[in-house]
Image (cartoon, rainbow, N blue to C red; front, top):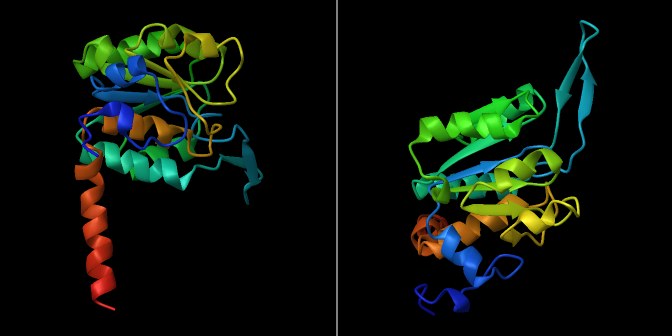
Length: 203
């Protein structure tokens, strides 16, 4: 069916409300919390030869491909994390994430800094969160999203709640919502379909 009819789209996970689709159609920047949104919330400390520990965490590959989809659609992305981790910097570099802010639980101040730099209106910004520090940002952005296992007190502030839990493809759901609401989904995935077709024909 035509993607000009949002109600008839095949959505990833939870079917979004008409309001969420309308808000998603305006998004030019997707910001995300990291722990419990892009990861399952677990932090791993790996002992090093010098006796220090290296902190790492696990990211979802479906979310990763979704971030590439965003870039292909000329939609910017950013990470806002209360913790500092080299793993986040590496992940952002691999995914071509434009904004990376770590080490502050005052996320609204961090958000304001990004807002002053990006040149977008707040209605053009989406955010994915899960816990209390995310609420001030969720209240301000054009599209407020939370993961399925977000704190109960946070969910009332969301325009869209994912079906997936944090670290299990939740960001991918939001990315697909944005791309489908903007009629960019087919054009973004077409190049991957063409690559698969060429690969299959060469066997």
